[in-house]
Every structure is written in structure tokens, then in C-alpha cells.
Length: 319
Image (cartoon, rainbow, N blue to C red; front, top):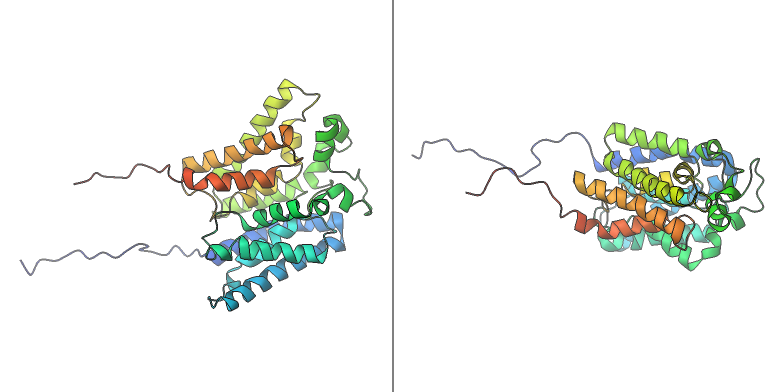
């Protein structure tokens, strides 16, 4: 009996697939670069200054907070740089330096480190910071007012604000083609639907983002916008307009897909994404905010723990 061979097992993972956390973050940064470059071509040098300050200050806050709290230095994993980049992409090109630095501090400390660091945050740090600052300093997030003195070769107004205030005809000077390539007023890295879609497809193709969340998000937004449009096309804009305007596509591919604040199973991902798109349209059409993506993301972040309880049936049966 003592000579019988025993099967020895160890805890998972049994085999490393070669992927790592820093790889995902750096590839997400790469995927966001086309949208950033399109934003720089529209808004110029001021936009470059905002992006550089957002990334560098986020990295600086990460380093400082980990040193003060005597935690391991995590700057090298790229997460702080990614948070700073996403936050900068959402800002107007004329955002003052103190707003950028304060925003990255809130994102790193309150959005991430206060929950124990990477993997513990229940909300997307960049989105949480944007929402807090937009409530505290609302005027600095009014794109029409903040970009008033910049020169553009296209009608310089926020299409979502115009559509919400005066109906879709008020935004008709901007074609869907303009919105697709980023000829609109908005966040630095959020204006080019084409560039954001290219980045999103890259992340999905490389396996860093599951397709279920972006597709469900877009479907939820498109279906809800379509129902409003069918009900009253004079008051509500078309689904394609809402798809390409504002923060829709940066939300679909870069904001709702944050690992820590999104579900891990297929059905929860589909529900999570669809509810996000639905919430965006409810906020845009009957809520107080012209865009709504930021607050919709926070809402679905909040319900994520509940959705994650929907799990596949375990294989086998109890003895």
C-alpha cells in the first residue's frame, strides 16, 4: 500500500500563457495613441501639454504615494500612465495645469490606491476623477466655453449640447463624416470615432479586451437611441449621431473595459455593456447632462459586483 503512486497537484495557475499585467496596460496605451494623435491634429499644442502633464503627474503621484505608504513601486506596470492618459483624453485642450494635476491625484489616490492598488478599485479611476472634478468645477468641463478662443476649420460647438438644447437640427452643420474623423468640439482623445474604433479593434484582436462589453454597450446605446428617434425624430437625434458624438466610443472600448471594475463572465459582460449603453441614452435624452457616458460608466461599475454573481454552472457534482 505504501508503494502506491500518488498524484500530486499544485494550486493554479499550472502554466503561464506569457501575458502579464504590464503588457495589457502598454498595449492599451498603444491602442489609444491614434485617438490622441487625431486630437492633437484638431486642438494643437495645448492638447499635447495637457496629455503630457496628465501622464507625467499620474506617474508622479503613483510613485509618491507608494513611497509614502511603503508599498512596492508599481510605476513600471504602466497602470498609472494609462490612467493619466485616459484622464487627459477626456479633458478639453485648454484645461489649466492645476485641474490636470488635481485630477490625476484624485484618480490615483481615491480611484486606485485607497482601495489597495491595482485590481482592488471598484470604479474606473479616470472616470471617477473626471466625475468628481466636473461636479466641483463645472465650468472647466464646458467644452463650448473652454474652447471658444481656439480657431477651427469646422463649426466649433459641442454637438451633444446643441442637440439637447435645440434639437438634432441644431447640430446638422456637423455631418456624420465630421464626427467620424473628429471634427467636433470635445475631449482631446474622445473626438475621433474612427481612431477609437481602430484602437478598440486592436485590443479585441490581441485579446486584451473581450468583445462582449463594447458590442453590448454599442447595441444598448443604438437600440435605445433608435427607440427615442422613432418616437420623436424632431426632438431626438439618430442612433448614428449618438454613436459618433461625445464620449461614446472611448467609453465603449477604453472606459467600461477596465479589468478591476468590469465583470469576468460572458453573460454579466453582455448585461453590463448593454445597461451602460442604455444609461447613456437615458441621461442624454431625459437626464440633466448632454453626454452621460461618464456617469453611466460609474453606475454600471457600481452594479458590477452583483452581475459577477451570475456564474457558469460548475462542472461535475458533489460526492
